[in-house]
View 1 (tube, rainbow, N blue to C red):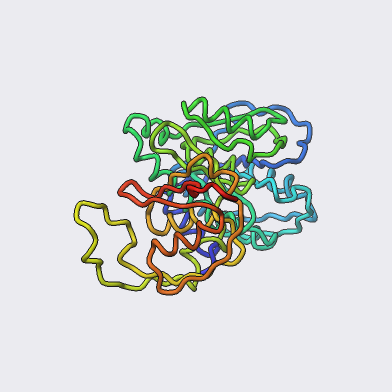
View 2 (view 1 turned 120 degrees about the vertical axis):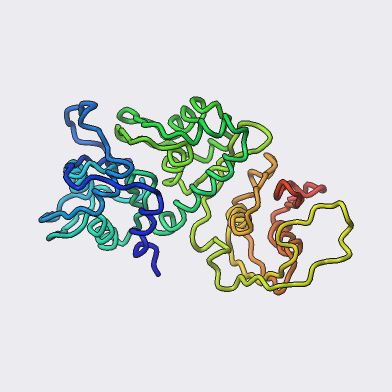
Length: 358
């Protein structure tokens, strides 16, 4: 089933439901200049969330017609009638004309059909509807849930604070790199890899309550990035967001096969996750960092990346393994980039090869 066709189920799974009678306000984000409009009062930015959000998504729009309207303006009009926040990825042209009509359709179906007509993707990040390139929307929700699971491994009080949802806003011509840095400071987190975020300018925004994983993921998604929590300290590292073609879990050529347990493994040593299965995998010209993250996600491994590996994670690798152990698979993946690994109960640690050669 295509990802967009499953949007209704994915929205439901986030636990948001909404109110059918409440009329809207949608927020559009991107890198375009905004028209000069009066500032909205706080009471006008009461974005729907929770049960009211879900209920609104299932309420019908009786009639709507856009005749070659610029996308940003059309979405803004739709937004202000539904009070559902929308985030438009910076890579989507906000000025492209949109000719679109609706007659007695659920808002959920309207949004899904609109994305299809634009040949882009859509997913739900908390109470925010996110429009972006399909490779990103196909993986964003899953990536956010994985980030949450990693945050929960931190000390309980610290993790709870990051998992609490808070509203957020920024002013006109905000720089996303600064927004990311500010979010880290407010969350008492150090951030590695900010240089991956290029200079950009965004319009003013006011978003409903989001937890840290949702908020940071929305800021990073348009740059093809996500974040990796580091367990030893309150720190995160910005890493490539594995897109659909990089994800081992979705590759038809990746087929773990049952394999007898290794009885001669020395007692007292941890058994690396996945060591009792065999893997068949072919990778063609993909970033080593993205493939590593995708493989770790599939196996439920926490990944630790030595800071010295940063300049090698974008290197592209091609390899093929058949009926390989996890150790052999990781070796085939990492060695071409001059990297090595260590498996333990704590997860997968990736470091520079001892000889340090490039």
